[in-house]
Image 1 (cartoon, helix red, strand yellow):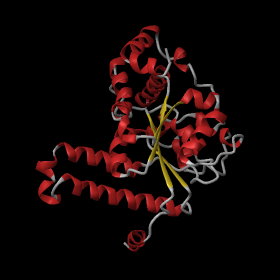
Image 2 (tube, rainbow, N blue to C red):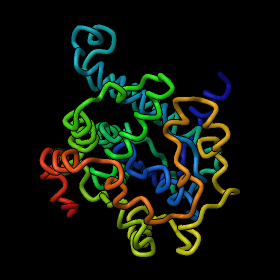
Image 3 (cartoon, helix red, strand yellow):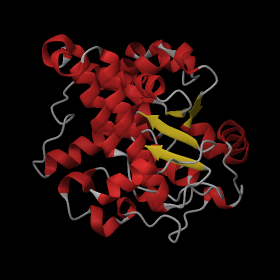
Image 4 (cartoon, rainbow, N blue to C red):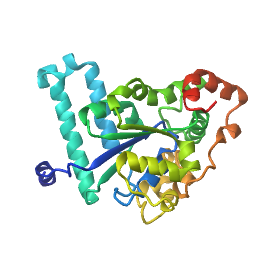
Length: 291
């Protein structure tokens, strides 16, 4: 409790920028997050922000039945938002203090993306970076993950998927609320394609730096630096011990940024599966010039 009291009595610097990074599962968010955290004035690469995902998914569930589940305890919904805001503030303060209160605090969790509009409402000063990846490549990678999970009889939320419609709906849900509520973000939302970042990192990281204030060495940003990225999430040995986490492992996590995974779906998906994705996600693909 003493630690919590200490954090309650201190505040992060008012001019600190908090950048939330999101995007669909298997859209390259881990390697992009790793590169983002090479900034001279940010925290180093750290694991995904599971606490925030749990916090805002809990918030979402409670809002759906607020009157019957919470109103007699908290009053109106704004009071419940205050509780979430307090927990968010404590979390950010605790993480920030571990890394000497960097000028830019960069946090990532793919599944938090769905709740970005709510995060923005609770924390108006936050900035958001959303990563897009060719839906065909992302879904192809999801299929590979599912094959590895099924091989070890490990259940996950996607292992039951049997049709491209299920994969497409799952992919689209990451982005729907963000794009339907663009006006909520004002100038605090940046959307970049994974393919552009790995193809032209110098330009993309200049834009990211201008957006959030992070300072990058454009030669170092593309390199994997084991001393900088010490998180156990990037430990191959650690990840392969668990059948669930090993299924999601990619050798690209500990390699320099590269274009090797662009177009990888051609070796994974059938022509029919590819056409189905292009049909069902037609508007999204055209919006970002994937087809």
